[in-house]
Image 1 (cartoon, rainbow, N blue to C red):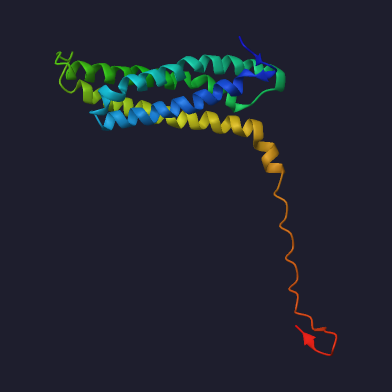
Image 2: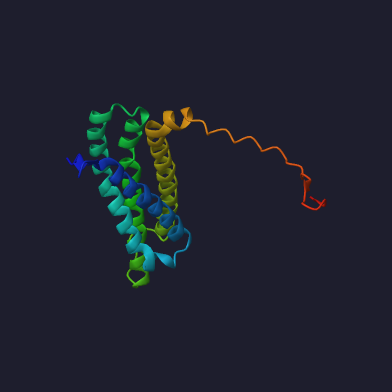
Length: 181
């Protein structure tokens, strides 16, 4: 698996794509679940975003393992990162099902199953989206703490400079005997 690109670790590069795309898929899923009219228009784009995020997760995991061999154990981040795929897959499946059902309905084709199937899939998609959103946060937070936690915590901000004492106006004598303030 890819470890480095031009001397830079692949993991942070791939992770940033996942960290942008998976939350976008979460927000998009919530949007189309609540606004059925958007399912036909934005649904295919949303499925594409969720698919790319899901496909990149194994790349992020394996590149993270390669990075771990170089820099050491990231602690709980590695275990949480391995679980994220199992949150993204149900989200991808449910958002795809929701879009397919809506496209069938809007084209006049009969829906398979009971009339409430689309509503049930929308509810499950919302649950999957919320779970995936929470897990993305947990993985990202643990990764940030693994990388930056000790550096940020140990580097207290520099103390603010002491305020300069107020300076009172000084009387200056002018040639010719007059004083100026």
